[in-house]
Length: 216
Ligand SMILES: [Zn+2]
Ligand SMILES: [Zn+2]
Image 1 (cartoon, rainbow, N blue to C red):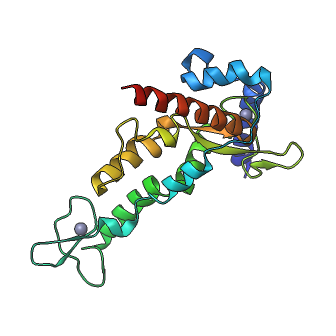
Image 2 (image 1 turned 135 degrees about the vertical axis):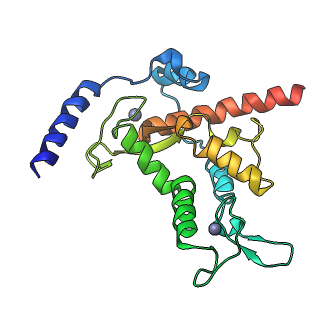
């Protein structure tokens, strides 16, 4: 218990240092965030959002049964990546406990959004990467200031097709999820209020992107 308390104290000290200022230098931000910072003063209306777009992506999750494979004789193969064994009782989808544990761990770590989001919030020390707001780990939601922490895609989800990421085959799905949608480097913690503004700006920037594509 004592060790835990000491750790907590150390964290609070760090949080005080971070509070009240942006973590990322402005030049390091992608262009749409820089636009946002310029527009923050102008009180941008926040009604629009690309919720529709997000819903579309939600339907494109890679389901665990998509990893099931059958060999030439029509027999069920082990689900684990690169394992060429057939399934073996008592397992219905795996050849062994080792493969079952290994694959499930890999899948849960990389394809369950809740796990990924929580790991990003933890990595960012429960601090908004735009305004520097820090919320308590247990109370990510603060009723007093009506704000909470969310996980944002730095390059937004709605851009994935423009960047050559697709969802047409299982191979492409995995690539899109691992390299783009669930890639640590493309994720950051933001508070609800900052997220709303960023989303609005992404929406605007996307329409510019579509215009550029039409010209070609
Ligand atoms: Zn196996
Ligand atoms: Zn914020």
